[in-house]
Length: 177
Image 1: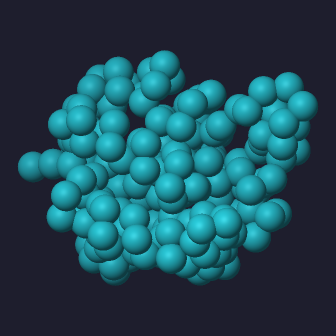
Image 2 (image 1 turned 135 degrees about the vertical axis):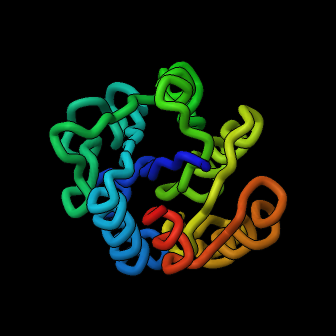
């Protein structure tokens, strides 16, 4: 039987204040999954990005904090990172191995950066990855809208290659196992 964890990546105050694509739905869905995971005694892990001194995600600033609506409980682990992948020099892989986790339910920001890098690192490390629909998001850029980036990565790049993209209801059933 598989052992899963809910991983919440870079849902930080400064990023949410910039209003990424579909933010209210994404936050609502992440909140729902956190609640279900906690009620089911599944671990919720958080990852927080530090961009360095003078940046909007500078360590210790208000913008760097995990967004208050989905903030961790005192007993939940937060892994700090400085690169896109949550696996790069964070201790996450070692922690997951120590808990015998084989499935990661991945949520957070930004779709084409830290979520993509984390997903592919997880895949490369042998984890099964599940992406709940409408639980990752990003911003418009000069090439594509946040919506198009979300759709492209979730349904063209990730689904049935690096991960399974499932509805929040399907993922909720997995968390209850």
